[in-house]
Length: 450
Image (cartoon, rainbow, N blue to C red; front, side, top):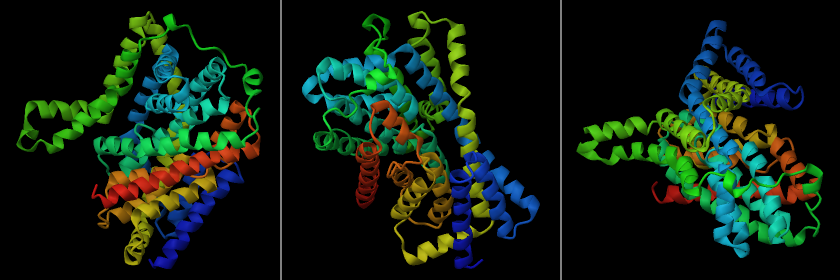
């Protein structure tokens, strides 16, 4: 297949996805399924091969990450219903003091965001932000914007969030390296888009921006201190899966000792599925049974949090199927050869493709999954780029711009009581800063040989 034809088919397939999602208003899973089938037929694949390719790609991706996402969701649910997020927020704010309130809210967003999706974390922490703003007399945007930025940073760069896990599987990255490199990228991105930008933009906004949102949305006051789990045990529970996965990853550097019994145990418990399963079980005890929650109630919470995952997992699976069609049809190989010949920096290519998809479809998860399906075969041609950095660059592009076709745009606008222009000047710029800072950090780490 010629490079021109391969590029044309890939572009048309992406346009079909965008058209079906944005104009026809189809579910992303169905849009990706239809586009994948049309792509296979257009590339000349037999009908049976088209179906088998999609099924194989979807099954491979879901087999690698579906259980990880489900277990991470259970852990996040326990953090939510136990009041663990409230405890973290109150403790960090008390330690930081009113003068460093924006920095404290950034730390809260980073910690809570490790275990919950952006939407859940936002719903949990916005009422706390209103309460803290009322108690300290600070403008609500000074309190809410840094935590919003931090939640978005973690969503784009850190496992076990869906888009990150999809890219990790596609690029065959090491999860331990991804965690610590993601932390290195996340902190500067959160600082720039959170406290630094908040202090810059808030004085340029109307003094009453967001002031009427608390009454309009009826935010509840946070729980009483006595009803919350301890800070230490909550933090231990949140960080447990990260520590286990990092420990499993370190066995690669143990040399001859890598075959010892301890190394085998560390690799086992450091597997993302095992590590998150252990962390979820730990949360059932530390945040549930230990605080008087019944086993029946914990089961109900576990079942409740899995229901909304169906659409997300189907969408991720369809993204895997779309990527498989690109590879099995020969389109990815042709594009990969052209990209290698043109010497396009792979980090920049992944970032740009993800940013374009973000603007087109709004969803960061769709942007990451589609981009990973295109870029993974190019990386396989021996680019020399760290797969972990490629995951982070894809995530950086996928959070860019905060466009109005993203549900997060309207969630932030409604919850904080902003106008559309004010949301563009806050949320959209924050997302863009996260994406640009992330790419810059990835390039710098690449120059350092990581």
